[in-house]
Amino acid sequence: MKSTGIILAGGASSRMGEEKGLVEYDGKSMIEHILVALQGAVDHILIVASDERYGQFGYPVYSDLIPQKGPVGGIYTGLHYSSTELNICLSCDVPLVTTEFIEWIMQVSSNGVTLPRCNGKTHQLMGVYRKSALSIFREAIDSDELKLSLVNEKAGCTIIDVEESSVDFDVRIFSNLNTKADINKGYNETGG
Image (cartoon, rainbow, N blue to C red; front, side, top):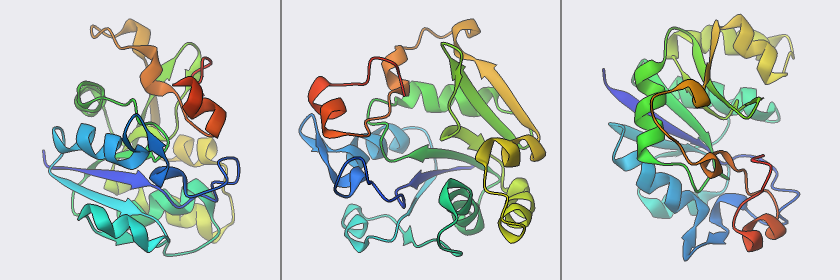
């Protein structure tokens, strides 16, 4: 099945103090690390962001169709522009994500939404989102119900425990680098 990688880079980046996905981590911007991981795993890539500097990476960049709706609005925009049923959505602050993880989560995904859980924490912005869930995201935006976990539930969410998978993932891939301190440390010890 053809697939699309959707990078969500439309957040306010308030804790980082500058455009998060463009902040340098280990010699490259965070988004470049994610692009490298995606390139080996998906057929198409698109970026949801309002900052036109993301265009420098050569992939289509789309602003939120309906602004100020948080991650729900970003995922809705990505699914709207995606041409495939199978999509992996990643926030722009997970530079340690790997091609192996992306391939695995897409392979084990089922209908609606499939999310990984690691050390008891479910990662909403490292999951597989089917295009068929688009209407549920639109309904949530129209009714201003913007809690992502509730929208995912309505879309038919499956949660997969990473520890129970046959693949041995480095838990650091789930680390969100939200602040300069996280970047200086290399990763957030708590994984989020």
